[in-house]
Length: 138
Image (cartoon, rainbow, N blue to C red; front, side, top):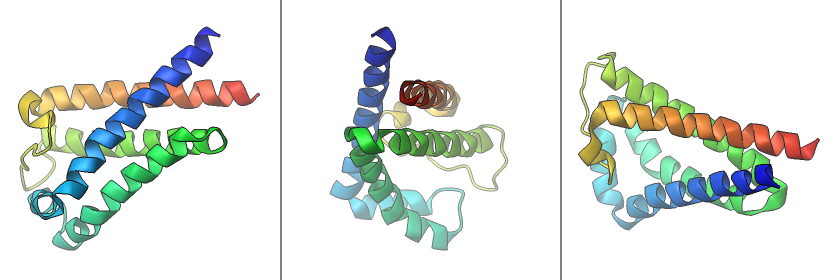
């Protein structure tokens, strides 16, 4: 029972996170495109990610909502969180030639170090969510 409740809390948290991340991108796609072009990625990739990221984030919400696809959604969440964590880690440790702005919602106010720590925590929660869902299926 406790594991089940924790699983639903983690799922709800990530549904809210992906909604918080994706909806503003769609509402102001031109601004998001500018933000993507300021990142430490090739310009062609910025063009692609301008649409791919918010579509993926909304798709993950759909996967997390339905019982049959929830585990896939949690794996997708884990992959996305790990990718974002690696990217932010690269910024923190000056791996890239370009030092992009943290141009998104809450992250404009917390800075890269706290952003990295938050991503580590969210990645760990996503892993816990995957493990709990896998355990439930056995």
